[in-house]
Image 1 (cartoon, rainbow, N blue to C red):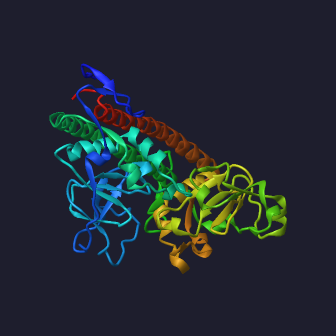
Image 2 (image 1 turned 90 degrees about the vertical axis):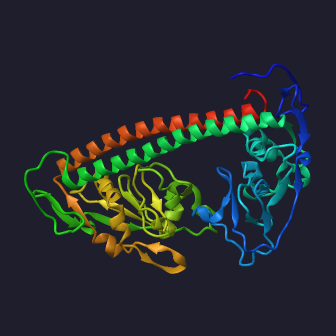
Image 3 (image 1 turned 180 degrees about the vertical axis):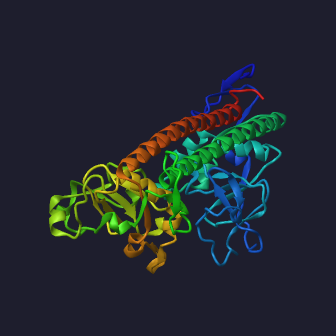
Length: 429
């Protein structure tokens, strides 16, 4: 990338040398604190680390409650700077393109456009180097709720190019970052398609087999359809023994920090369960309601908010205990554990239809309903064949997905580097 002809020391540690014709000023020189209120008629805005300032109703992943009385919310106009001071250390700030209102806990500033273009300031303040500066200025007991005062924020020194150069930087970054974001989106879509293809291939294998069968018969289950004539169909309770879970007394220190995994829904992130976040002692097993579940058992989550989104299924790779939100399924001789895991994972939506609403807004999977769920039962040798096929498909797809994820990391790093290079004057627009 082309550099400027000459540079000078900025006197700012994070910035280093800047082009000789650039100014270095504090944020106070280009912003002015404002606190206009009493406009409850305006739409509520939110500040995202990834997107900057957007309308809150444009996304459904913001779970911060809006006050019933928004008359105290601060008014924001296009070109204003909005800072979530509790998350400034994450880069949660930006120049607004909207008129609206934000939480009174946010910092709101007008920008002095005669000195700095809002678009340039937006890129600059969200660049990676400055996020480290916000981190050093933020304080508090809990990281997620660190605070930062405007009195400290306004003292930050920033580089200010001539306005025509700011305009060129904005245009270049708009163009380049849009191209990078387009490439990122395509790769994210590719990952979704690969994972969908994996699901389809595995589901077809466990429902129809991996070798051509000439004879099928109606399973009698509407969503399942026809299955090979030599396959059986049995309720889950005929194929496994159910084991419940529990929680040893938290106040009994002798029950905790042992060497026996105590698996809860937060541990169900992988297909093979090899560890847990919490461990209990043999005394806890002896003196409480928890039971040992052998290696090779299937673990499922049957209660909690997690069931509103997914049905986690894993196979224990070592003896474990579980909490009360889970069930252990110990396979009987005629069913292969890994094959059964693929079947249960593939029928996620049908299983989720069995959930019932319980107290406190949670969802519960009744054991009797789960036990009655129909499972296809090929001959054991064919189950092993299907299981190995599904494993090969999973490994192949996951290897490709891992490669695409690495490319995503590189693209995001390229975007970060490009923005930082341009707004700090290390590159020339």
